[in-house]
Amino acid sequence: MQQAQFKKIGAVMILSLACAFSAQAQDKKPNVVVIGTGGTIAGAGASSVNTAAYQSAVVPVDKIIAAVPEISKIANVRGEQIFQIGSESFNDERLIKLGKRVSELLKQNDVDGIVITHGTDTIEETAYFLNLVLKSDKPVVVVGSMRPGTALGADGALNLYDAVLVAGSKEAAGKGTLVVMNDEIHSGRDVTKSNTFKVETFRSPYGPLGYVVENKLSFYRLPARPHTTQTEFDIDKISSLPRVDIVYNYGNVSRTAYDAFVAAGAKAIIHDGTGNGSVAEQIVPVLQEVRSKGVQVIRASRTGSGVVIRNGEQPDDKFDWVVTDDQNAQKARILAELALTKTNDPKELQKIMWKY
Image (cartoon, rainbow, N blue to C red; front, side, top):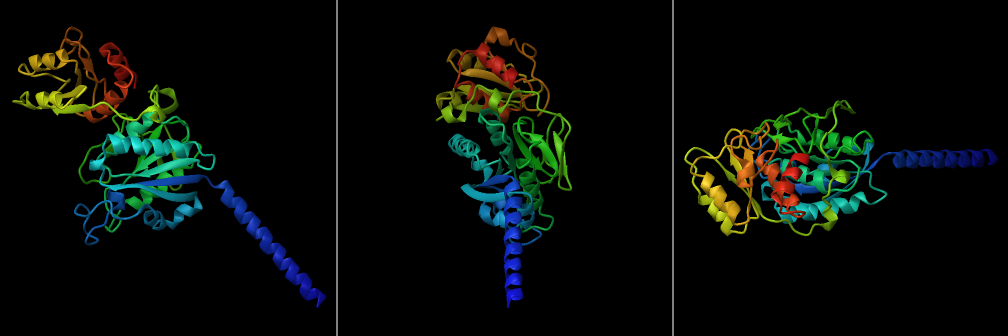
């Protein structure tokens, strides 16, 4: 009888120790919040061979997480649904709402990192916005997929796993908002979508910051431009953004879009020009007129990479115009919106465009 009691006590002690060790192991894992916004990573197709024809933003974030049980081995994860939309429907109001919620979570001691599941169409704009306005060194990772989870060769599960791994790592801290896709870690500043359907669509003109391979992340370069805690933009102090529009240029371009955007109340127009932000002869007086009405004119290039040289194609000093440096039009728009919350002086705007 006594021996049986000892055995029972011993079993209880072993179980208690096992529970204690399990709890300790759980405590050692990073705490990562996955915020769902929709997109292809939350999409579903009619059959397993539908990789481009499918309905996006239909699977809740909790189900996306549950479909990758391996995540529980690398982090304590919880999901939170903030939107359920295709990313082409992201607007300034939604950007601000997302940014404020991420900011709130980053301030919590029990949150070590954030992952945002996002549609790929505008992932680069959201990532750049967060890269400029968040005031924390904790990792924030934006992730998506090019194929819905129902497709053969779906990429979302591994992308999500890699994103959680990066968001929970100390190595990713202080590097700004990141985009993790297709085994690569990109800076939110540089990354852009380059193809309509390939899983390797995301590219940075200077290459990725690093890679995720076999549960290991490796960084090979660091962001050179200021971000997050180093910027003058603070999401907690932003309630709205001024209107900035983009006019795409082409042969035989007319003034119609410029006039419409000015009439609609644009505070700045990104002139998405050919080559080095070139301006067609018939558009030069149009942009001068736009500027005379107090609307900022910012020259970008539709080529997708390279630096737009000030006073190169056009006498920017003479016309009081601004150039984008190396940013594409959609990212220049994000930066211009934030810059206009600080100043309407074109000289100061130019400094901001060069700085970030």
